[in-house]
Image (cartoon, rainbow over all chains, first blue to last red; front, top):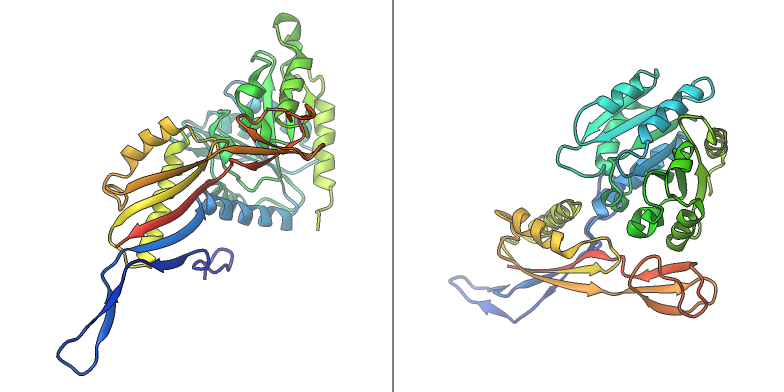
Length: 257
Length: 113
């Protein structure tokens, strides 16, 4: 039996023998049958089942403690850390927040978050291009987030790989900045397909860049018609109140049973 | 390059299942990879060659069943082949499409001895 979730780890496999078995008589008065043939193991197992199992374990922990876990994904430089710095500073008196930072190297982002007075864990993935549920499990074990808190997980800046790895988050938030192309949602569809909220950042720079707000939303809705949008600027503060309102509603939202 | 993580997971599954069956060699491994699963086959091949060295899968025959994408329109219920996630329903033109097939990423079977 699996120690993580109590499932029967053998249940998904069945064994089918090919070829004949034959008896082998030898020097005592009974025989033992055995096969000289190959064995086919019907594995039928999702390649990511181990990650998904740990993700569900994380999810159960977060639900039981009403921790709003958010997986923040984007390309590098879209302003994830700046958005977090601003959010953590502005919401300091309203929510208990925690941050898990994922980067290939250095603790530079975690240092920036730490400076806001927030409890933060840094995960360095080394050569890895994404966070996985196992890393989150261990980061959370050390962190022990309080009940009714918010846990921001800042994934590695990469619009491709993190899309495949469930961390156990409640919502996946994809961030795009107006200095990127407005066709990103269809160039990197997986990330927009698996997210529930899209934050469009750096809107204070809109007058200077050829970025169409209508187009980016149209493209993103082609990939994911259910996606919601928030337009913000961490520099001017425009649109941030709607983001804070979204967080507040999510923390207070009753669990679906 | 998440393909390397994917290959490592496949190796772990093959080793676990082989150990359960006291097998010392994997002759063949059969995989199911959907066309919309987010796996780039060239990157997958590259990662495979490097990662299977000195594992049970080093000399295994690898069989990949590619599963083409299939969507169903949530508006008009039409079922149609999907090459990309952002394709609209070819019947009514809506984007409310549920992916029915093509996201698979599974180890289907092993032949061991």
